[in-house]
Amino acid sequence: MVSTELELNKTESELEEGTTSESTLALYEDTFKNFAEGEIISGEVVALSNKEVLVDIGYKSEGVLKLDEFTDPHTVEIGMKIDVLLENQEDDEGMVVVSKRKADKVKCWNDILSKMEEGDVVEGRIFRKVRGGFMVDVGMEAFLPASLVALKPTKNLDQFLGQGGQFKIVKINSKRKNVVLSRKDFLEGEKQEARSKMLGEIEEGQIVKGRVKNITDFGAFIDLGGIDGLLHITDISWGRISHPSEIVSLNQELDLKVIGFDKVKERISLGLKQCQASPWDGVSDKFPINERVKGKVVNILPYGAFIEIEKGIEGLVHISELSWTKRITHPSEILKIGDEVEAIILSCDKESRKIALGIKQIEQNPWSEANDKYKEGETIEGEVRNLTDYGAFVELEPGIGGLVHISDMSWVKKINHPSEFVNKGDKVKAKILSVDIGERKISLGVKQLEEDPWPSIPEEIKEGVVIKGKVSKVINFGVFLELVGGFEGLLHISKIPESQSKNLEDSFKVDQEIEVNILTVDVEGRKIALGLIEEAVSSAS
Image (tube, rainbow, N blue to C red; front, side, top):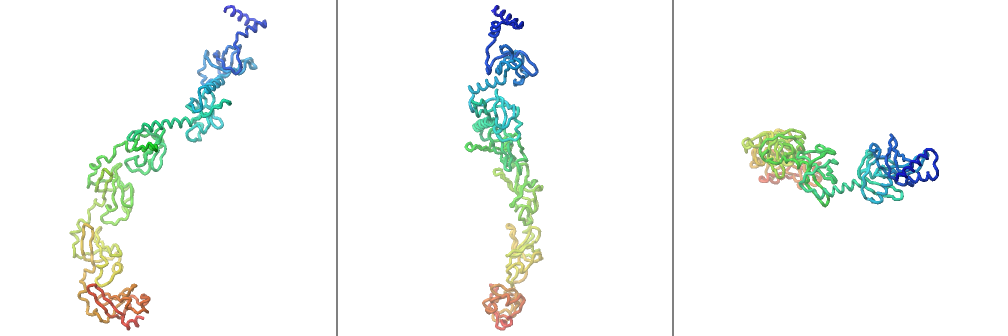
């Protein structure tokens, strides 16, 4: 061993002096290992500079490689053992050309071929953007298409540069020695795994954490970590809200209660308000019947108005409970959203979460004293407020009115519509015929202010008597004539010659005076039948 070292020293000395013989040179070269280009060689870092690393590979000269071939150049130090690939045994300057990066790639590629298959997951870092995607360092360069970098398409691809993580191998091309990766497939697999795990663990009544993923008019979709749940607008707050964004915002983290779970359809219903105590607990004690409360109008519908009397508690004022005195066809006639009002609790049902309110009950019911103020047989005066086909409504005081039926307007005239007798706004006197407090009805009569004239009908109105009358109205079945004393008689169309009955309105005019004879007088039926005499026919024509 010693002689050999001496021989080597001698050989080196001879080489330096230029006196090397062929046998000595051969002996020198035999002391070095034989390497082939493309071979991976183990070496040791023997020198460092700002840009290069000198590696002793046991060859006649050291190998040089770029410092940036190391993933983290700061970790490189003298004495470090590394593997390099021999690219060229001697370049133009007589140096051995080696590459750590290519050695790593070959080793990684061999490792992939021996250990990895399509569908396996590898660790890597996105380090460069290229046409159509990215290059990922997984020990070697692998291609990541832009379409497979995220779960959803994104315009800002630069955000992924420098990101590390796990990727799924989707394609291995042995001939070209390249690998295609998918971050999207890995994320989807991870999401499905989390989804399956959550579906196996979730239960109704459970409190879960979630992130607001999307907001719509009807609610918010919550990401529970692999699976989405729906937070409906009605389950966001005990109080009334018009849109979910009033309470929740995008990406907000929430604690929610699972209020419904369909394993077959994989649908989860969530509740935010259910994580808080219900304001309806103990509502009967807080709001007893006949209690006066204050609240704000939050909604108006054709049948009534909703009043919020406490956060999360609303009561309904039915349209019939708005006023004693006004005839209201829609609540908006006296209320608008946002109004502050007082009301009386009429009923409270905790189970169905319904409270009935009354606003008119704040004031005195004018009908409560009507029995004492309005007696049958008394004469009153009022203003005609409304006309219908069957009569006229007369206001006696605000909130109190009575009806004069069409049959109680006149003893002697046939009235087909109240407008023939009175007009809206007229002041009229009438007699109270009946008072029904329960139904809030008062019946009035105008004709009852006078004695019924029929029992003492004038002598001029007797059967067989010829009398003059004035046309009061023309109808399709005859003509009414006003006779003495205001009585009306009917000249039926059958008693009128055909020449005149074809067009009664042309043959007879209102206020026209004609002579007729009394055919019949029916006192009980209050009817007078008239006949047209021949002289009247000729004069009328």
